[in-house]
Length: 285
Image (cartoon, rainbow, N blue to C red):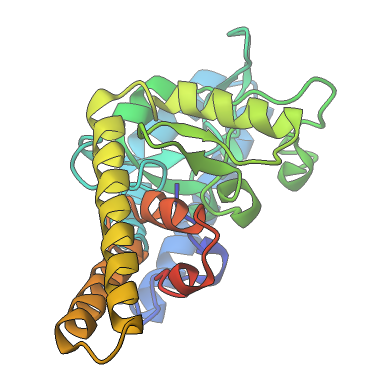
């Protein structure tokens, strides 16, 4: 999982690699249509026409689909949850808070967050391996506030699902040398539960090719760390152009693997930072 600063990004931004920015008029039109659709859904909800409300959501999937390429550009075309491009299958525009029904841990359903169906702040780019299994899963901690259209309070919900646009959530994710996602050291019991439930629901460990890819990244970084220390020792023994060249090469490869645009960069960074070596930490992209 990687942090995406969605709150401070817009499709009109001109500094997003791989994205042709929209004009302000295009963005204003998209927002205006979203507002119109929410008003229509609210009227149907007030009239007790929930099926018609959900049909309206389904009929307008192209509206959130229009932002798919922009969402992918924000992550260098990586899934926001798995941090890979192809191993997690094709991309979906995932609704973080489900738009029709929301399922608790025991499978019980409550009405979804339909008023967020066309809110771009509720959109995430997700490979469909995880998105298909997640479905409407969105449990809250027992006793949590629960947001509604009449009394919205999403920011106060105690949710299980970790969110890529929440830097604190992303910091709860760690990895082991076998390529498995684990709770970060020091996580509280509740935070560990959140990590475990998110991993299970999004198949972040269950999907074998994904775990294997992480394991290989960990092994490559371990090898680079060994090369770094060997070259560093040779340089410390006196002027050694070959060792200096090797050190420069290794530093470059480590920076490439930990660059936020690289696949599984979070795994590479975690492997590096786990050594608690200031010289290595400075190489993190």
